[in-house]
Amino acid sequence: MLSQNDRFTVISILDDVLGVGTSLKGNEQAHYCPFCHHHKKKLQVNLETQKWHCWVCDSKGKRVSSLLYRLNVDPKKFKRIKEIYDDHYTTPQNDKEERVQLFLPKEYKPLWKKPSGINPSYNNAIHYMTQRGFTMNDIQRFQVGFCDSGLYSGRVIIPSYDDTYNLNYFIARSFYPDEKMKYKNPPVSKNVIMFDSFINWTQPITLVEGVFDAMTIKRNSIPLLGKFVPKNLMNKIFSKGVKKIHILLDSDAQEQALYYVDYFGKQGIEVINIVPDQKDANEMGFTKVNELIKTTKQTSFEDIISQKILSI
Image (tube, rainbow, N blue to C red; front, side):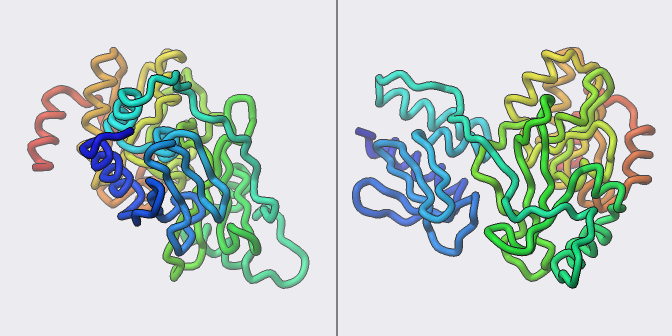
């Protein structure tokens, strides 16, 4: 049984990651689901058994740590949760994430193929992608689709495949400007290498936050789906012997960017930190962002110090 202090810590971390929850009977906490984004708190977490389950989209797991793992949260929070439960329960835990087979939504339709008849969703999806600077060639290359019904209705779907061409994630982004929940995440771990099937590991790679940033750069760019490098990506960078990394995180994530510049640099990898002069790479556009990648020099220790001072 959890101590009061550990219970408080677990609840605080869940509230920080999922938003403030509601205490229920039987050691249950209710939160908004980060996968289906239902407007009510349908994700329930049992603080003692660790089991969690969304009653709307059926996302579920056997451990609190697996929930945090799927969301690619701050590694310190993930580690603290594991420490708490490992200290209280002697039953051996499998550190590997429960594997969930992922499929594209059944309502997915390829956006590069115009449907017959009138389809407002198709027109809105095309307009949205065009406004973000993407051509029909980009749409077809990245196999962008859309949904006009179902759980992901009103969203463009951007799939990602691993190096064996199996679907490992997809982004579902609303193309309606008044939609409050811009993204709906599939119920699988974010510990994936987005666009792995496109990556040439013998060439420099560029790490960015969002999928549209990577699509804007076009060449050898990996979206982190956040500010932290997923464990699987970290492992592959070293196993493939990557020699050079460009880090191009958003303007509000330079603290994390400098951390990775320092970390990779100490491992003997040439690292270039590119600070966007707008919020992110997608806002800058293909020409400008690729010019920055070409002209920015390797980040030195002195650069790290000066950039940290400027960010204070």
